[in-house]
Length: 123
Image (cartoon, rainbow, N blue to C red; front, side, top):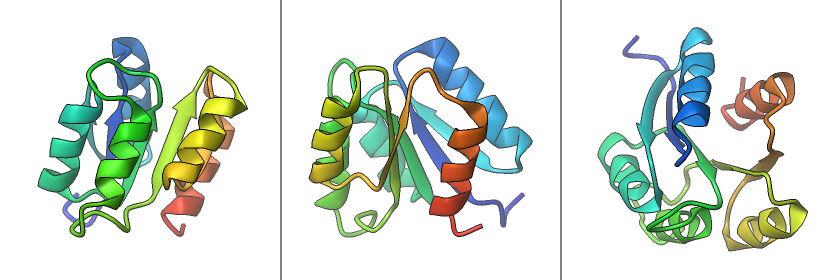
């Protein structure tokens, strides 16, 4: 599994975070998780993932904050970031403007989500 692509999932909802982790691991990805933007940033710097999947609305630091911090940190600045939100395209558009790479609406459509993940990872 050492050559598996690494994905960081940052999601405050325990059930959603676990479902995403399991779905990605079933596809052979190495998955790391965090519950908010603060710990998500720490995990991004620690693991240097190939992709970050983050919710927008979270406590402590939201997804837009995480996107800005990642983009401002040279070691991880080029990491693709897939944002998820159940609050419509307004939040998604704002976060894309902050530097996110792509957007998937909640509730997550598994086929669309995996297609976006694979596109972002160049598969």
